[in-house]
Image (tube, helix red, strand yellow):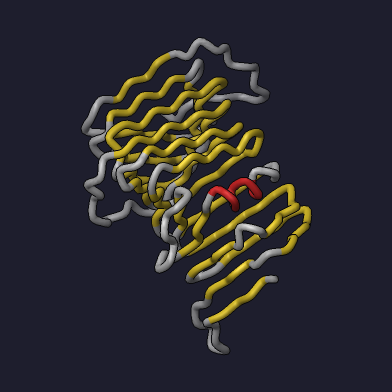
Length: 239
């Protein structure tokens, strides 16, 4: 069952809870201004899933989720989402990783968008077919997180989308891309003081795109052993 609470006739913010049961559609969209919780026994049968929330929290198994705001996602819910072809998660604030978090989504194309991606000192691993990272319209001024964890990204393709994005709470960020890393819009990614390593056989950009990667730590670009597959259309970078 789907339950909505905390709303008012004048449009006040509310919460959304998805209980046990099955939700099926060609495309499924979830949006809430406050919190969105999903029962571990809920089942999703949709080719495209999009969820927008005031914040997004990826939590490790065993983490106490009481008091967490936004969309809270544990391993059981992520396993349900992994059955979709595309999964889009948009936070109007932070995307936070709490504990040692592993997102293994198989062939699902994952799109994440937030002003800030924040770790709490744990080891974070994201493994998916195609990964897209986006930011917000303006750079965040939030306090820098002091925890030092790791972030590992593994995908066939990594797309840098539009916006400003900052990464906090990571000492190392490693991206291992089998096919290509591509800039698809105008974006700035600030990795703080993290040591960043990007391994890919091809780093390219769509025509008119502008990509800026910055860190006060080390930034290393490596050519991966895999050979990039041919891509239809043209690719280039802005002057």
